[in-house]
Amino acid sequence: MANILVANAHLVGLWLQMLATGAYFVILPQCIIILRRKLRQGLSVWLPAAAAVMFVSTIIDLVVEMIRGYHAFAIHGTALPNPSAFYANAAAPESLVKNALNVIVAVISDMIMVYRTFVIWNMNLAIVLIPSGLILANIAIGIWAMWTLSQTRVGDVLILADVTVRIRYFFVLTFCVNMLCASLICLKIWRVHALAKRVSDASATKNVLEIVIESAAVYCAYLFILIVTSSVGSNVFFIFLDPLPPVTAVVFSMLIVRAQTGVPKGPAATAQTSTIRFGSRSFGPGVSTTARNTTTTTTNTRDHAAAGVELDLACVASRPGEEGEGESVGDSVSRMGYAMHPSAEVSRDKGLDKV
Image (cartoon, rainbow, N blue to C red; front, side, top):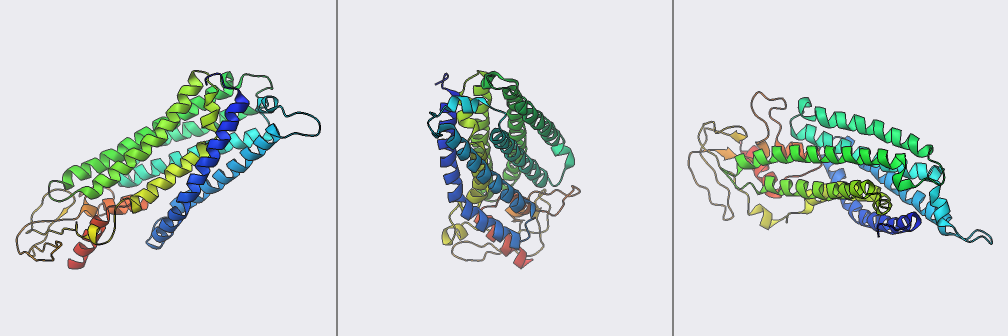
């Protein structure tokens, strides 16, 4: 498999790209519905705009790759097809468009990850300085790689050519950006989870944490395959390079869809709701206090008078004196395309109604 011909690798890559695009089309309607609902709830337009650009890029990329496949394997007149000769011309216009779209989609995905990190860390610029610098470096390397591709001559061994080295650097930086941002997001959510589980059921933060980890693992594993195959000089690299835009779009959309639909809704979810209030005391950031009597909402709807604290899982992100004070983890993850567990949202709404 390591010695697969470049033409055969592109053919297999086209099959995988069509499969990945089909999977993306299955998820896309759910993603659109969720984004429209979030827009009506005040979501910034940047996330739907990024989704739209990613959708257009993925479609154009598939069309261009299908045109390339047709030209490579079609019979023209009496001449037999020569796909190896066709794919040897890496500087052809179709090849430049195809690879430019790979770079664009990857950069958009990186920007989304950095902005999500920025939002969940309460707009802390210091947190995203390094990831932002890596993205700027990646854009420069992507432009450099496209220029190198345009200068590649027919007959060069593509997997060993300079352009492949540039692209490998590009994917290494993309890998670092996604690993760093996913780690920062998980760190923030884990801190919220550790605080919340001391007083109440913290399944909301745990659910978001699992989704972030799984999504980051899938995308980073895919990038790791690209890095390794290009490093060892295997043409298998082209098999995984071609489906990159739809795979990126699938991971992006699954983050949004799974966060909204990954937990059952209805009575089962509502049954997990618990709102507890104590007397006026400070129990640390994210814990709201009140001098009123305690009201506990349970599945049997019994009220218990006591003295204590109301813990709202949607209010444990901000700390007094920090930038973004008063903004909740629920608001942050919602604005960045995630959503809290339904039980946490119900708890937040009931708590606000009683204030």
